[in-house]
Amino acid sequence: MPEIRPRRSVLYMPGANARALEKARSLLADGIIIDLEDAVAPDSKAAARAQAVAAVREGGYGRREVVIRVNAPDTPWGEDDLAAAAQAGPAAILVPKVSDSDTLTSVGHRLRRLGAPATLRVWAMIETPLAILRCEEIARAARDVDTRLACLVMGTNDIAKETRTRQVPGRAPMLPYLAIAVAAARAHELDILDGVYNALQDEAGFRAECEQGRDLGFDGKTLIHPNQIGPANEIFAPAQDEVTQARAIIAAFARPENEGKGVISLDGRMVERMHADIAARTVALAEAIARG
Image 1 (cartoon, rainbow, N blue to C red):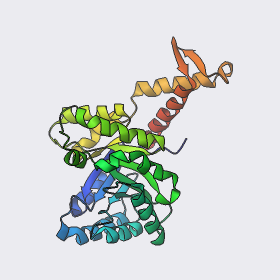
Image 2 (cartoon, rainbow, N blue to C red; image 1 turned 30 degrees about the vertical axis):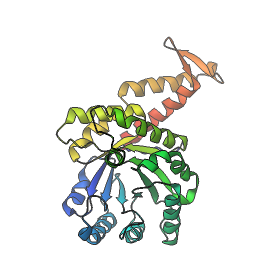
Image 3 (spheres, rainbow, N blue to C red; image 1 turned 135 degrees about the vertical axis):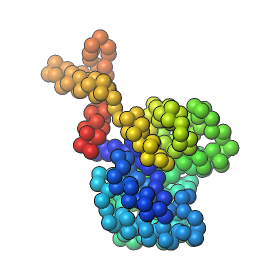
Image 4 (tube, helix red, strand yellow; image 1 turned 135 degrees about the horizontal axis):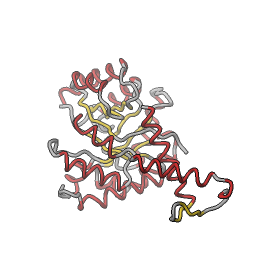
């Protein structure tokens, strides 16, 4: 099983806001995305880039996964963002507006030429109609190690804008796009994060959307306010009864009398070998969360 890293809560932080970058060092989010794209005005791009790089190099973010969202490669700031981020030492670079695998191949080649460390990963925003239509192709790019692709991130606000999909409670119009992206991610063993929830004062609505995202198969949710961290961490973590049941399944298959069996009976229900695989991941995720 690949190493599991909790990504229940990943908070966007504007790269131009020094106070926010400092505050992020004490937040309980699994990850932060320092944003040089949407959250930064054009005339502040260069200053935000320098500030973000300085914050990442300074460190102090502990176990949190630090990601820099650069501007798209075809913008006036894209190349400079990529060069600066490659040397700053984040865990990953988030590339916006990815609509084909060629973009990821190009970014990967650029990072190699820049001498980026081998540990640097690439995350890809899925936020255009073409990205949805080509989602499997984009996810398949992870098979090419040069792309460094590790995670897909849904840009639901942009998808809604470009497709004219109405953002309504329950997200029924958005569900086909979300499901396609989850299937693509799982087909190529990638993590995938759900999009943001815009209503900051609507905790009940946020919790419901987190539960929906979890049930759809997302690994976590991208956030726009620190108040959303707690509910996301809770909902995207395995519940204690899930962990207990998972341990029981693993233990049952480990018994000598069940060696080599594909199906067993446990507490009055049929359990297949694939359930043991699911259980192993549940336990591994719970242990990763507990380690902090």
